[in-house]
Image (cartoon, rainbow, N blue to C red; front, side, top):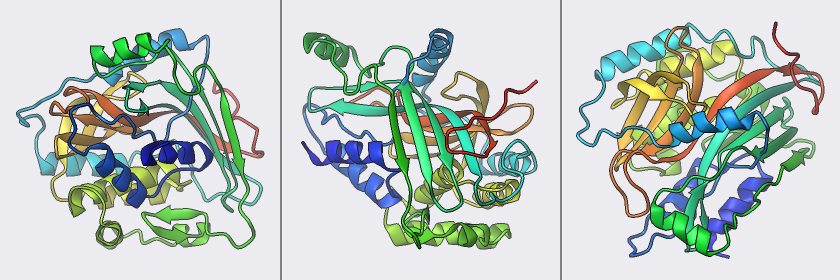
Length: 340
């Protein structure tokens, strides 16, 4: 088992890799090669659902998005910053207060992450993931595949067929529960561990909070540039931590100060919903936060290619997630009551 496959297995049992670990995996995966080394696999999990027939069609469409190789799309930094500020004022559908003891923040998502079968072929298995997280760091997550796998090239599909159509964990629901030991520090800003109390104490002033993210990006020495990694850390933080609405809003206002962000007028999330995006382009890739066109609620985030690479063509989504449902629940197995 190579280093990247170990990272993939590690992801199956833990909430997520640090920014440094992810960057290390990316550098290893992208080493020059005749045949692409196929393994990046953090953050995915399988799931099956009868409702997945319709949902999977939307997800599969979203996994190959239009690519703009000339880089002329968007309306520049000022429009992107204004979109983030509008979004900051629109984050009303999330956690409206800090979690209390005994409560869990529940989120259901569509997810997709490129995974390698050794050095043979790369695939993406669209999934549904459910997460429960408490203020003390107690977590449960459950994943299940939805719909057929997707492949970056026809060669990958043919190799998959030649190997008997085998995929790691194919058709399986995966569950894991993590209960931290007393005194554990369960949350992170990049490589900085923090308690929930410390997380809640982060500054609300946009410039001060931006500096925290910027300094974290400098410290971890990740990504292709400090600005690109700062943007990635913002997306990771919004996805992985149970942030009250006013802190989410502060993070978005801080993100508006990142140099190099750009507006993407038409961006589809991994649930197939068309929205407006704010992205950062670097090294032939684009990291994107996707917002609802009307409400500016955050729909999700993903990373896709904007230039052809040796392992996949421009437009191919490497990783991402799209929020479908969320709410506060009173147990590690409960789900929010259906709306309406």
